[in-house]
Amino acid sequence: MGLFRRGPKKAEGADAADVAANPGTPAPDGAEADAPGDVEPSDGPDPAPGPQSGGAPSGGAQVAAGDSARVGPWDAADALPELPRVDLGAILLPGVPGMEVRLEIDKATNVVSAASVLLEGSSLQVQAFAAPRTEGIWDEIREEIAQSVTQQGGTVDDLPGPFGRELLARLPVRTPEGRTGHRPARFIGADGPRWFLRGVITGKAAVEPDAARALEDLFGQIVVVRGQDPRPPRDLLALRLPEGAPTPAAPASPPAPRFQPPARGPEITEIR
Image (cartoon, rainbow, N blue to C red; front, side, top):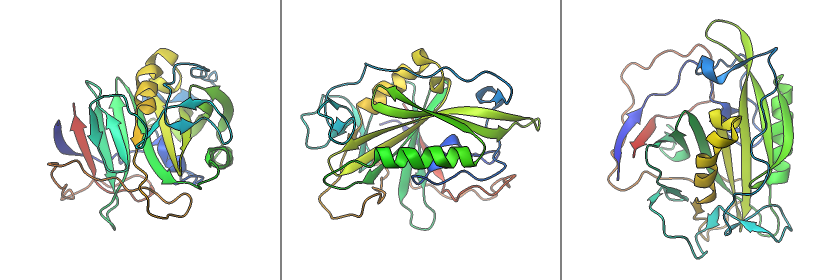
């Protein structure tokens, strides 16, 4: 197990994943970029789309409702490849050398709601949700995310990818210099048996296929532990801190954000 510490909350801007922290939820107006290198000028070229096909492991998740092709991520009931994984409760996250894992904790409930993997200048945020027994929800959620992005002034393309259909979005942001630009982000999803796993890729991996490969491989090797409890569709499957991880304490003097982002708790970082 790696070293755990409390990661600082980004106060200078909204993470691209905030566009759909809950499926279909728009990002706040006036969101700023976390780093200038992640932002394209508003008059710049469209980012190149990510990988279009292939590369996904066989296994637990359905590409789309009714599709017979099987790819990862995996369900806990599947015969799983033997890989080192971090047990986060509803998600078993593969361990990759050099990655950092930040766990986002809801202050009100003290529940870990999302995990973000930072690797080689890119990030992947993952969340797991309950889904109906008979059909997937990614098609519906994808439409809601696309509508949310366009309502915020961004653009979005629905493209084929290694896990089925995905969204390549250009999210409107304001740089620290006050310029208006667009941040690229890829929204990927996998419908499994009674669960849905959503990922948001930002950084170089959102536009460079070679940079995306490591995070795509990681997403494809995630194991979702749904449990047998009845849950309404889209109910967030709560994560938990790994055994031995210290409980984070809130910072004494948190920096004042320049805008009011969606409420997020303190973060835990694992360095592998």
